[in-house]
Length: 378
Figure: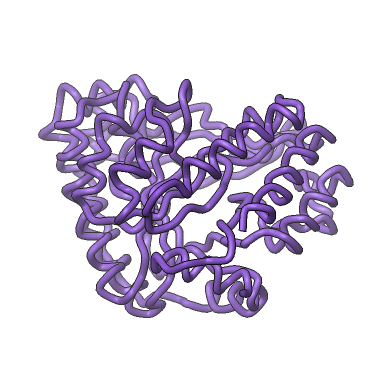
């Protein structure tokens, strides 16, 4: 059974020789150790063995967006004046949007030794900024999807894995315009304005999803953003309003063309699992164990595993901090609970990947443990 066959059979709920194992973002295709960019952390030789392990041994799920002649997933790309520069070993991007008599500003920073972008200033800083933003001309869906990046990745993978199409939901685009405190204030106290903001993004995301699903049928998708409406941030009633209302149509559009929709949500799931299941997705990740999450994998498998492929249940913090023998206990429990009883399928996977320039020998060994124990679980 090839790795691609193993993953596709898992998505369809068919029998496999062993559970797939995936390193999430680390896939052995996108990491380029020879890239001379000083911000490329994978140029450090400590990453080489893990990149090779991902390429040679894991069931590779490579994430790709689908490009359009449009404005999303950058919700202000067509509206903003953008300035990029380097200072003191960091890269900065500043976006300025003129809205009425206001200038809305967002600022992000990337450091050389950390593979992430830090938001130093959010575009919307309160209700008045939100109202000004909503007064701007709304984005419009236009153009056709470009399937080339997905097809190229699939050709490179061959039988070693699959491509997963990656998309935000409207809530993700809306929430990231604010700091967390300002987002919660808007979502809780001005649902009228917040619904208008979500509708603004949904009017583009849904037709984009429909067009991409038609152009690239039968693929796995990841929809990210629902966690912004999970506990402890918002109550389940607002999860239904802010997530289900917009994500359920995205799921239907993907499935209409034979695709598989996976919901991505970190943290506490117990209060929203019924609502997630009611939308009819095909998968769920990363199902974090307590204390990061609030449900055990066995609970999710017993109650929802008939219809959902379950991905994850390993914490990045455990990969980075636990000695191999203790980490092996976590892997064994995830494999046992993820495959217990009848269920559609399980993919062993961490919740994220390290973002520092140097990968520790202990973390590398724990990744090796994931592969060794999964290969022995057939």
